[in-house]
Image 1 (spheres, helix red, strand yellow):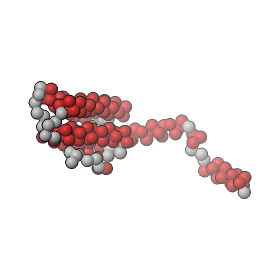
Image 2: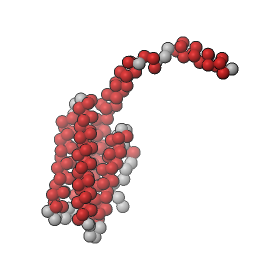
Image 3: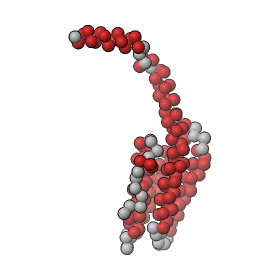
Image 4: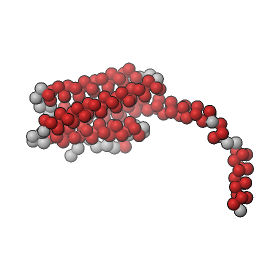
Length: 166
Ligand SMILES: [Fe+2]
């Protein structure tokens, strides 16, 4: 049974971010599956941990660059949470490479951290991203006034077309 299952509750409403979160859940599940075996393969555990680390770092860099673009006011606090998670995964890698049994208990911590982070900290920045996106869209639309056709013009075109077709 997987440690975590993806649900709509976990969606933050930004498809790219959701896809990356989904990946993180899958990787944590993979690690959990391997560690739950009577004899986990050290190579699989090591590869999965390194994959999780690489992906997490890229994902965090992506989120943090969004914060910069939209001047997210809570970026520093959020970045500190990212740093703590990265340190946790690094701790697991170090323990694993030192031959320590990292066990499935540690994964409970990862799971709780991920879910808590997505549900609270990540969902908190989404309104800022959406607001910045719609402001950018409005600015783009303003630069192309031709897209907003006056009602009378649209009606006339409609009638002309109707006449032409009829
Ligand atoms: Fe985050």
